[in-house]
Amino acid sequence: MPFSLIELETVDSTSSFLKREADKLDGFVFVSALEQTKGKGRENRKWESQKGDGLYFSLLIKDKNILSLGSKLSLASSIFLSDFLAKELGIEGVAIKWPNDVYVNGKKIAGILLEGNLPDCLIIGMGINLNQESFLGEYRVPPTSIFLESQKKWDVNGFSKVFFPYFHSRLSKINEGKIKEGYARYDFLKGKKVALQNQGKEVEGYYQGIDDGCNIIIDGKSYPSGEVSSLSPIK
Ligand code: BTN
Image (tube, rainbow, N blue to C red; front, side, top):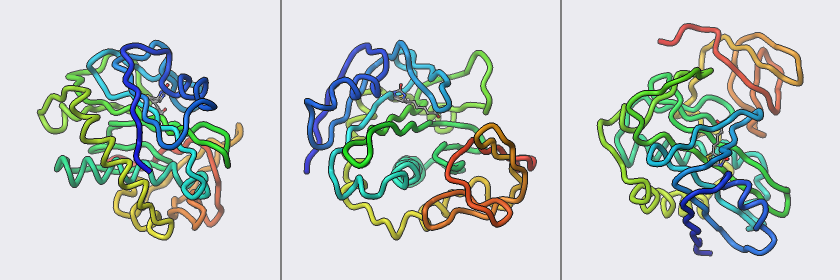
């Protein structure tokens, strides 16, 4: 099924927009905005969304076959973006920090937020840092941008014109059996000692990869969600 696109100038959040409109829409619908006034990150954090700095978009999915993959779509989305950055743009040092943060050389270049109402619909929200030359303020993880990593500035709509068809095409051909293998290409936490904040508790231990359900494995135990950080020095 082809995708449709709604391009907005300013919105509170592209994901909130799609939540409000989801009942009226069908198929694959991308919504992008040049700026967001209430860009949302994971764990109730804010996502800086100034005009011209980044691509801010959300994708509504109602296709039952794709939705049957459930939370694995989170990891799959980060693999598609990582492949785009590494293989299409030639950026080196791309990595995924579980569950779906995309890093370049140890710095965060993009964030992904999944919301929705499985098994009926899912909204994948993605923010990609494109043109920032520097970052002001405090960040949990040091950020970077495509400009800082490749010295190339992007017109935001020009970027979405190439990225949306790529992302949609990868999603349409998604192969559940290849998600773990795709993730292994980019695994940022491999070989690291980690701390996981999970439901108010902290677990520390050695990261051992992900299981078939894409849950993180630490010291032999699987965890489906949480905020993980590396306790090993970045090499
Ligand atoms: C994260 O915390 O890493 C996830 C960030 C997700 C940000 C994107 S920007 C487009 C979409 N709309 C939002 O309000 N959030 C997501």
